[in-house]
Amino acid sequence: MKIAFIGQKGIPAKSGGVETHVEHLAVRLAALGHEVTVYSRPYYSDPSVRTWNGVHIVSLPSIATKHLDALSHSFLSTVHALFCGYDVIHYQSIGPSVFAFIPKFFSRKTTVVATFHSRDYFHGKWGSFAKACLRFAERLTCDMPHRTITVSRGMAAYAKKRYGRDIVYIPNGAEAVVAESSDMIGVFGLKEKRYVLSVSRLVSHKGIHHLIQAFLELEDTGRIQNNFKLAIVGTHAGTPGYERYIRNMSEGRDSVLFLGEQSGEALAELYGNAAVFVQPSEDEGLSLSLLEAMSYGLPIVASRIPGNEEALGDTGAYFEQKNIESLKAELAKLLSRPETMREYGESARKRAADLYGWESITRQTVELYEEMEHLRNGKRYDIRHRQRVA
Image (cartoon, rainbow, N blue to C red; front, side, top):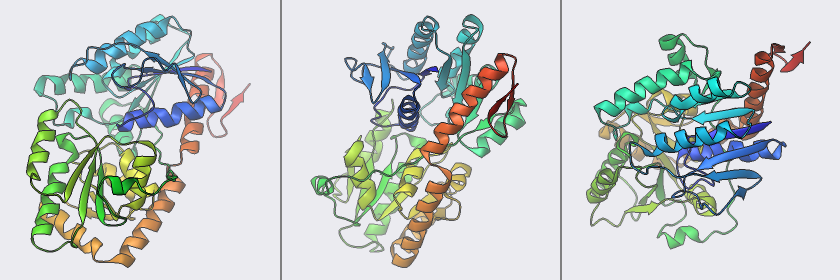
């Protein structure tokens, strides 16, 4: 099949759950023999790179502002894709998916799929008008494509209840990477198993300000070990004011380190040598960084929200959403119990391998593409066995 991905910033992924999701999926689809194209933005991926790990990359410009970046790039990518003869056009996120109607009506032989990653209007970076537009985009994402995927069971149930649509559940995935070297964390000023790790975009709904406040208060009251650090990986996503705010929270404290965007071996080593991973989000679909932490066997403290509970199950500790005292209590308790940390880490690693392996996710995605192709050609398709029925 000839497959295109639209809506992500590009690959290889530097940051962002959607970009990482597309990278893993696209590379595996290409390895299976499919012709895969990922549309990218020139400020994110080097426009001179045309192929990467078997995936074609088409770099097109965008209006690189907070409100117009994704929409302008997705529209231009959609127009380009109309003339490329794709069998499948797969949109990522509810904003870019508003353009799914274009190939659906003007490229009749193309199957149009969209992935509903999260309810973006809950994200603090958007104003009232933008949130209203995103709610409308969510409706279009569920109604317009030939098939819509959600990355969590909770969102699939929500879409079914709100829009009366049967949405396909295919989760995000996780895969631990073994770093070849072991000295990178020293460059960051970190020591093995002597730091708490957070990996996310620096936007307010990710709750990093809750984590910083909790960590600093634990440090001030002597409830965390001496010389322990908090390592924050990520950068802002059109929200530089929030990044300045959380940096100011820890100004003058050398125990909180902002490491910016990290990927590849550097990120793998940060995961592999952390003592604890904290996921303090106020809202999530199915957090890729949380799944990655699980795949590395890290003990985890997460906010008690549906997306985190779905991913983590009973393999980690929870604190009440936005509650600093609850986060302090759970983090301090876990760090003081090495045996519990070990048990949580082992069970989280097993859960990630059993439920969120990328090979299984790729297979399910291919089966969905094939199913839609057969159904749209007027042929029956046995979903139970994923075999064509005459």
